[in-house]
Image 1 (tube, rainbow, N blue to C red):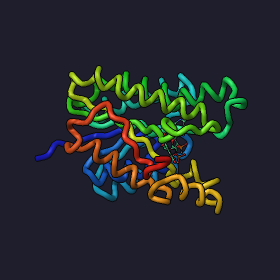
Image 2: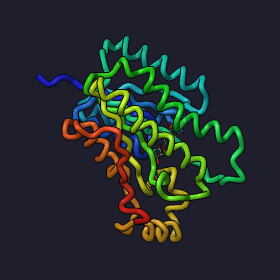
Image 3: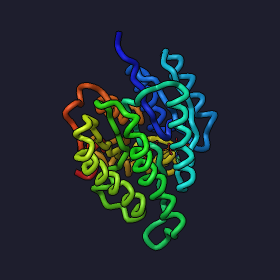
Image 4: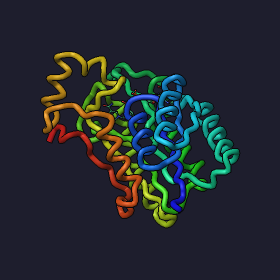
Length: 251
Ligand SMILES: NC(=O)c1ccc[n+]([C@@H]2O[C@H](COP(=O)([O-])OP(=O)(O)OC[C@H]3O[C@@H](n4cnc5c(N)ncnc54)[C@H](OP(=O)(O)O)[C@@H]3O)[C@@H](O)[C@H]2O)c1
């Protein structure tokens, strides 16, 4: 009988994280679904996972502060112990947020919150869970195409994702001996709540069309498919890679 695999997906209540959770459930994973403010939406994802025949637990965490990250780490560890789960196979660091405040506008608090949620959380969650991971486990980070395309109005957000790319290839070297791979996925414009405001306008549609070689925005499921591949046996010899999934943006 095949051993059940467990995955943690952060930011699984909406958007790309929701699509990843559902795809991983279809791949046979049982899931820990992290959310921050949207418990109802997280519970909808839990029900969907269960309807696929997999198990799911929801778990809250606000990653904007050190305290919120630490509280989440304690809770996920307790949950692993209570459910007698020996190890996680896959951890997907997807939770994150952006800002439209530019270089001159971002203040200390916003800067800290962006780095806390987008960089510190993946770093310290990985540090804390690494001894709770299978030896052939997978860590998958959600980065962004903005790490290679300059958008001055998203500068601090882009810097957080640049840090994630650096963490990806550096940690890959550290974790290689354990047989754990770590890769990042760099989406382009994906149709989610975080882009809806401007993407669902005529101008936004025109911009998305002009930006990508494929002449369109992407869908959350198109990112989830890549995560599914990276979490699979098929990706066993890929590590330290930052994978461009921008539909060929700004080529
Ligand atoms: N959409 C894009 O075009 C795009 C492009 C490149 C990269 N990305 C990256 O892909 C990931 C997902 O993006 P998305 O568009 O799917 O975002 P989204 O629809 O806005 O969803 C964000 C998710 O992250 C959680 N989250 C937000 N702030 C958080 C915080 N401070 N602490 C803990 N959790 C928090 C949210 O939880 P609650 O809903 O429960 O509050 C939600 O589940 C992000 O890392 C983003 O940077 C997105």
